Image (cartoon, rainbow, N blue to C red; front, side, top):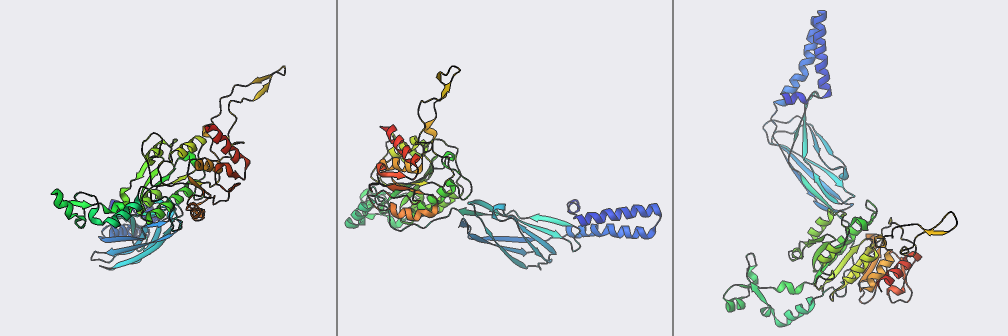
Length: 489
């Protein structure tokens, strides 16, 4: 009863106050008719509270999201089924489904009555322009009396999760040259020529498919042996995403980080659908291992991971390059494809990435130039060790003490970064947004050629695609490339 009294609405509280005031005035003035009116006004909300508090409605709720995972900018439908499983019909119900503000706010419905063992179907649509994982629910039901005097709130504990993934750009179906590194196709041809009986077997492990038992090897070894045939038909590859905060500028869908996430999702989905055995690596280390590709779950896991990806506070690329297997001094050679998505890189970082090209596999770098980044210094780098002149009282030139500028923290222009990476054997494309990726990808798949920028930021003077033949529309970009290259000599 105390909980029901706490649910009095403004109208109910006003009636209680008016009734109590009328009763007090009736005793003071000796007006019996005023006393009757005061009692009536006071009793009405109390009776409503008693009636609502004694209701024993048993309601069941079911929610379905169709689909439960969708790309940015698409809509999903939420279907609600509210069922009255009690023996009494319900009264007026105010139904509210909690939805995050990013999805449009709460959905509200008014139900006059649900008969005993009856149900009502409700539905609404939600749309998100930002990626992420959102909680939809729980459902809240407000019970109200016909006079609007009292209102009780009852909530369900069930909620569902909606995952909004990055936008995916369809890419051309042909594969990159050198993507099938490490003998993927050659081993497949060898298996085809020699037959499945000659495939190298291994010991049986709990959970292996019995259809893969290699009976000839089982008889030879005296224990169950299974084939490893699936390993010969998949090539390996690595998807890398630079999530460092210092490498990206801008917030919202137009920022470089959101564009980089969309590019990584598009490349990962495209390569995964070609049958490639992929793993996902960020600047913080390995996020998804290659084991997910064997069960065909890599695409879903990748999209789930990218849906909640955020800019990291990491400064160095060392953990990411180490997980990539190409960091200098790691002693690991990679023959598969490496597709890396970068934001802005300094000269030191670009040199380290260029030196990370190892093995026979193709290395493709996608540089996201979404704009909004600070302008590069004149000539690419600041003059080293030069201090400004200060004229003294007698006109003598003196040097003001000044610290040496931190050249390694200055981001290079995209064209300068592309030149350094190409010098290290990488194929490079520069895009302003994920929408330009399809055209750039087609150029990147031409074997033996350095792909041109999709944003038309660079030109080749001699057609060779080498850094020396690359010029940018801004003189600073060319100066950066020359200075950076000269710094490594």
